[in-house]
Image (cartoon, rainbow, N blue to C red; front, side, top):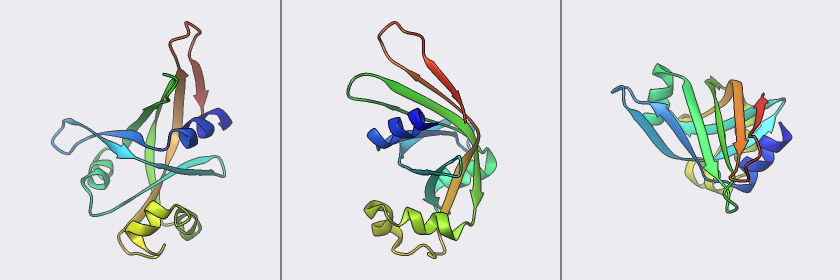
Length: 133
């Protein structure tokens, strides 16, 4: 878990892929928030297409590469919870705070990845590292 969290924190703008409601793949920039109690948390709002896509099909994948050409692929099921403590912690990110102002903003949503699987790889020729989270 620590390697996965560290990689996401060091490469703060990831790309989240969903299956759109039109049945086509959708990919967009996203940000990992933090790990809490063994869960990897992200946030969005319920007016966005990404939220609506995840409501219909919660299986997602996150990917990002580092400046040294290593990359991560992280997949799991998006599980939304109305967890005010998590929402408050998300407000520590100035970008999130700037978009939503307060944790009790009625459109603000948080989710974690259930049954998450991660692979960290690079071009070294070494085998990828696999993680079950």
